[in-house]
Length: 91
Image 1 (spheres, rainbow, N blue to C red):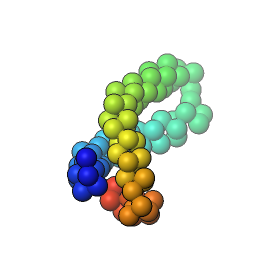
Image 2: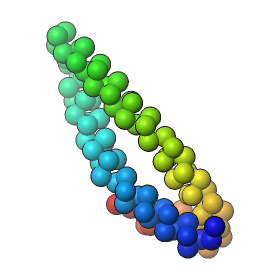
Image 3: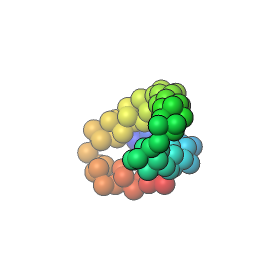
């Protein structure tokens, strides 16, 4: 696969997963705030939410593996710098 195809794949994946990633980040920040001083009655609920987040992240492991491989292939191409790749994947 050529560099152009890899760049297109990278851009497409970033677009497809950007909203999901933003949701996960927001959810984790919310969980972190709630976990600072939880009441005893909230611990079970918080634990369930953490487990759900872990499952959600693990469900995207195949997509992350493809993304990692794509970045790796592009990083080996001397025409690309890490900074230029970051601009492609910024969402």
